Length: 392
Ligand code: PLP
Image (cartoon, rainbow, N blue to C red):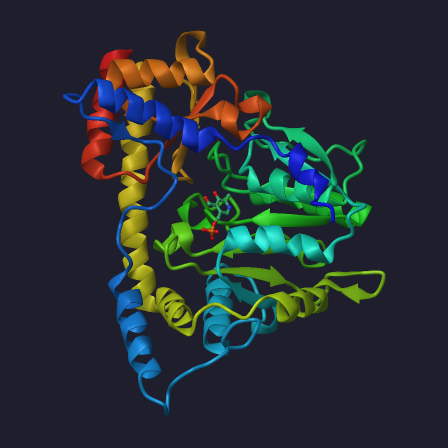
């Protein structure tokens, strides 16, 4: 018996544990000081009332034998896939319900989708980015190359014809930089992928935060994406579903390589390894896509966006360089006074009792940067912004 040796190649995942350790050590030695957490990557506002109503009604259905539901379809119930298809129509994109697969969240799909690809493929991953892309490929033993996201390219790396990659990750709006691709920029990636026969894994987990029309909400808003892209999305940040667990993956009928359909492979994979998202959760998710559900989630998104504005305003006043915050819940700032990411973390904790996330935890290009998030309470965010302003 041998364990998977690739696990020994994984970087130690200590980022959030170390943040928590340093914050609680400070709280222990300074019990009189109030810590404000702008490091949080989880939502804090409750579910939309429409979703809660639907969840309650679904729970009632489960209590009656006539309406009780056992195993559901592997790809998700038709009522939810149709609702998601309708959502895509509202973005000006035609996606058939057969091209949509419901899951228990984007993280699972991002890891699981790798089952349909050969381990010989080379993957291209932006740096910095959500660490799951690199970790899941390290576990599988794939070769990884990184695309540098830096202030020079606006944290939005563009394709390089000299680089040969088979699987390309794009996260837009990006976690942690908040940078989001325009449709024109994505068109260049689509052209590159179609030209090379590569596949783009497009993580749209934060698409609902996009308000500028020139920026993409879905890669399928770009012509040619149906033959080269897989889109993975989630209700986690859009609708407060981090604890409910519901996401979806879109694989169009035209996505084939050597006559093999990616949609068919994924259905085969899901039917072998996945027994569906709970019926109750899918009912809650479908309610999010209703007219009233959309109105309600926009209110919550507006609350977070207001927080982002509060933080950005403080950074503007302090003259600190940052990206994000406008079409994203993340604000990515350059550590002032040439601090590295972790020294700035300590400085902010000690001098202002504000907790953020050191950028170095998201990749080598994150060194010297720092992530703040808009997911806190409005009150704490206003207080933290004030402390930041007073500090610089
Ligand atoms: N993709 C990105 C870029 C994320 O930042 C996150 C969560 O923080 C996820 C995916 C995971 O989403 P889910 O809760 O749907 O698993």
